[in-house]
Image (tube, rainbow, N blue to C red; front, side, top):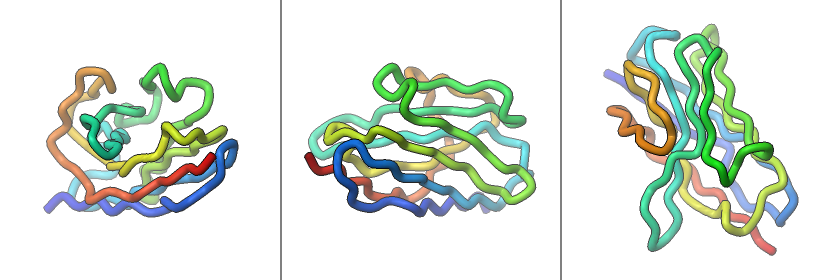
Length: 123
């Protein structure tokens, strides 16, 4: 079955960087589009970034454009999110997600989800 396991979360000061990773299995290495979502306490889950099967097409939330970079290594079955210039408002539980069709971050509702990794940014 489809499995996705996130890692790389942690605590960092404002202005710092983190790199999230998502190891996936249970589907072809380049069969699904993938993405990152996040949910802060008391807020709705929101899309952060998404990437097409081959990695050619990407989409970002306005709030992270220019700071976050999504990438994937299909040979290693890994999805990444490089997060730079982190701010306290980036504090959230970050989820890896996947679906057959490419999903824009603003409207996408991917079918498969990981369990999440916590990112905490202090001021």
